[in-house]
Amino acid sequence: MQLRTLKVGCFGGGTGLPSLLGGLKNNPWVDLHAIVTMFDSGGSSGQLRDELGVLPPGDVLKCALALARNEREARAILLTRLPMLEYGRLAGHTGGNLLLSMMEQYTGGDFLAAVDGLRALLGCRGHVWPITVERSTLCAEYADGFRTRGEVEVDAGQAGGRPVGHLWLDPPAAIHPRVADAIRDLDAAIIGPGSFYTSLLPIFLVEGAADALRSVRGPIIYVANLLTEGRGMEGFTAADAVQRLSATIGRAIDVVIFNGKLPAPSVLEGYALEQKVPLELGRLPEECQLIEGAFWRRSIARHHRSRLHAAVWAALLEHLLIRPAAEHPAPLAP
Image 1 (cartoon, helix red, strand yellow):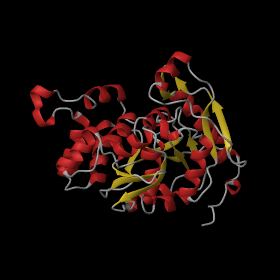
Image 2: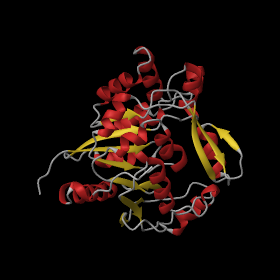
Image 3: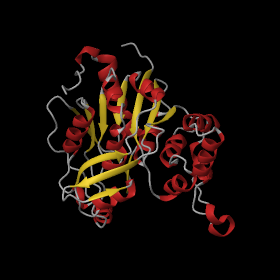
């Protein structure tokens, strides 16, 4: 077996994707690319978007920090929120969100240049790409016909008991050409972990994103979440996620990484109060490979970084360095 550097794209946002990036960044055989959702409407990111007209910086910032050379120190500084008394209107914002927003304005609104500047400042071991630089809002129609706008509102509706039926972006947004080129050049793609309806699926609603992903030469790997995300996802399984992702992308999912060992009952009881329960596997397509293991990190619903990295690396080895490339499935027929 001849080892070579693999270009790997990781798609998602929120708190899930940084766990994956943090585990992979020290692998010398991986050229890492984070492709990040850009539709955050809540908290500091949403306020900066509304008040300054900038793109929401939060998810990009979290991914850049996960790839930073000195991650712990960078997180301690750039994720600290400014206190109320001393900073007035800036209170509540993180230093990192303000820094990235200022860099976007300094570059004349060139968000890609601002992200590249942040990467250089942090000494990131990898690349960070916003899936789009066009301003858009995530919208949803639930199974009962009710509609809502905004990532926070979409998540709140399904968490409160409304199953999501249909998602769209308003106005429609297109992928940046440089980002599309980066995706088409990947050897493999990893989707997740992350909020399914507000971090993962929205990426592939961007015009051109699914087309670019279908060009990836190697496997598409889905990292299943540890928990469902509220009463609106009752009965939802990893297999359901695979089916919906495949339909949205237009290509089969090759590998699913799934947690098969639960934490102590006392930990699950705490999450049950939030209407979150362990995600069930369901029935995967026959051609989809399952990698199952213990990925829960202690008492927090986060994937264990080193274990997740080992599982991903095993899949990459098998599909890209052992199996011939011809074995990977062609795109699904439209």
